[in-house]
Length: 246
Image (cartoon, rainbow, N blue to C red; front, side, top):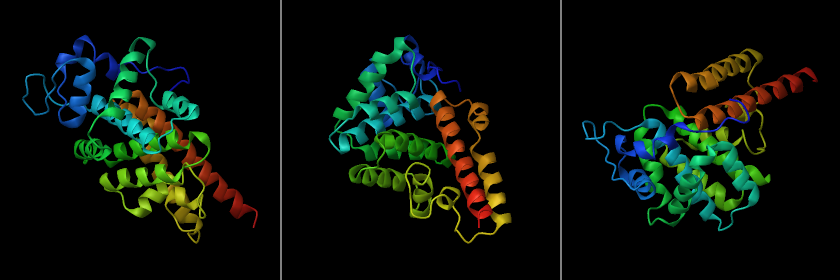
């Protein structure tokens, strides 16, 4: 996706077309508070089935808002990173800002939003990984992952069903770990050359942005996948360079 691309799909649906949506649970309530519509979540509901792109984007915004609240400080760099991950058309900006502010203030804890995402995308864990990647990009915008942010991200990761090894693999794409870059590929440093190559090929195929485009996912998912693929390729290149210099 081009650097200047702007998100229009999901947010356009929150305006006059909002009555055509069907989102329930805490995320539905959040959208309803912004769009002024009562939205429900059940197959056969008056407004149709749950729109997955809206659930994805709203969940990402809601969890980012709760993360900003977790350490009590919202830095300019984090706001800038949020704008890079969640890119909106200027006409929709005020609605997204209202959504972000409302999510910070709601009595629902982040757990409720994370559980709804886990339920909605339980059959597609790569999308849950997309959400975590987006949150990591925002949290690490100031060059460091703070203790409160790490606790928050670990908790979200656990709700999503990722174990500690998976969390470390995802984190390694964004922060330096002792065994980075192997952690990015989910490998031990002792892995042989064939294993490293095979793992790299598999990850490229699994996380290529074209897959997100083919599934009709929102622009955020494509942006996140593009950056994730860059991190995977960079880790592989570092391993090749390290082994070549031995």
